[in-house]
Length: 139
Image (cartoon, rainbow, N blue to C red):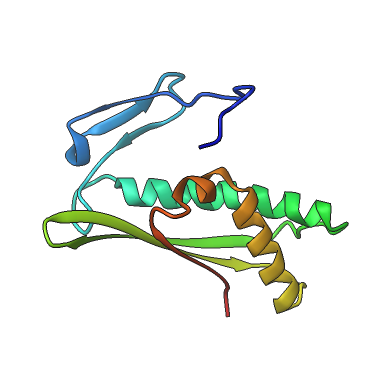
């Protein structure tokens, strides 16, 4: 397990009532209602939040990977993240797919940037070896 030398930021939230409740950050910038996945409830769910956080972080990691290669990631680069909640027997698990789009960059270079980002991104590091993850270039 890696250890942190310097804490750069700490995100803090307070959540009440789990998947059918609400969450709020300590600075008030995030305040959301939560609903169960697939329900008609008014809120989002942890899987959507995880997908949004991971894809945003992954784009930052792709920009860093591009910079290391002397490239500049296009402003319209994007990541579509899919996070599945599933079960096996009585247990619950996640699996994920990240599809990158890098307009103006050939498929091989885009895949190389995605692979490098997967080694840089803290979310990718946190999930590595814990859940099934696929990283690919969007068609």
